[in-house]
Length: 445
Ligand code: HEM
Image (cartoon, rainbow, N blue to C red; front, side):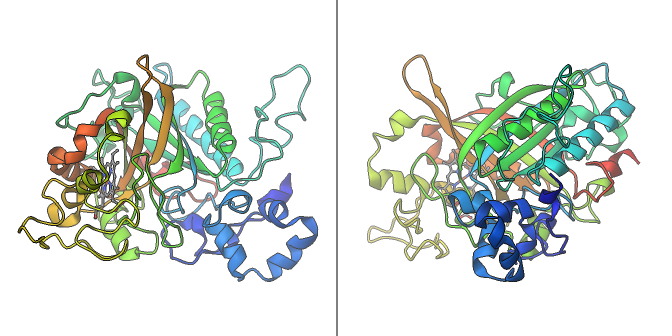
């Protein structure tokens, strides 16, 4: 399946993450082009690669079959899956590394994961002929459920949890303790936290995002399989319906409260804001994390049944924006900046003092922002017939302190009556991977 590797290497390609706004056609694999336009048309499309249709497909800004043809570069300055236009589906997994693994074994695991991820993100099997081309008397090297499917915009993003550096018993299993980023520690307890150990923590994480759930699940399943005996799944989460936009080319989706989510997000096109709020800088500590970020995951259950009995006007006051347009209650359209000073006829602020957007806004948090990349989830229902649903919140920031500041501010959030934080994890996300390297290589050298 070598035909699927014809993705570009242009510096402005989507895989370089934050390298620019241009939705480069280089991000499309040949296999993707074949899937999108049919084999006969592909040559013509490549020739007209500047065309808007191709460019939009590469950004994932189109839906359905067109979006699923996109393939993003795996290698780049930053890992893909952060400023990449948020795909529609998620499979997120946290792993614990086996106590029997040593430092060499950990590096081998990261190398095997990197090699597999570089192929999977281009719509390839874990190995050529992996699913059905091998020996009849050996298990296949690829589980096969993605055979015939395009890359579907798959990105695979790796992170290292605090316990990789020093485990819960304080043991430095891999000789990494001295290289732990000082800021990488378990998040403090927040007011209202109802965290369950089964959705909390992890030595390693893998975020797989795609426009096809089968492709995202295939990625996590095969990486778990590759890790067999070396690392095991601690917890994982499926997500559907992105709850943020990470590019101005994308429309704003809605969360399960029915509100537009991601309006005021840090977007891929805001290069200065990304440098200030998302990417660990060359001058930051530690140097091995330069070009990386910190990932916070929070599994937030929504008390859907209570929410659904709240009056529309009250829902809007809790959020601080209108439900239809997503405009701030101070007026204007979705893109209008909120005016927190604006008052109504009675002298009360139009955006209430305990509204979510007021308390989450940079102006309430010393200028702090973050890049949100969460997903809706529904994990069936509980024994009382209530939907087990909510928002799997994911954010990327230059320092964990940014999340801590905003989450502390949200202690007064009126939305909290309808929310319960049940899972939590933090990971250092190394910078981009160069060909021939494994993820986080600078940590081990
Ligand atoms: C289930 C829980 C949550 C829901 C339903 C929710 C919903 C929303 C909505 C509807 C908006 C307005 C649209 C937008 O700008 O994106 C918003 C904004 C925002 N939220 Fe949340 N959110 C949740 C949790 C969180 C958490 C845990 C954080 C961070 C600790 C957070 C941080 C933000 C930020 C920074 C903004 C942008 C505020 C601004 O600059 O105007 N949210 N959220």
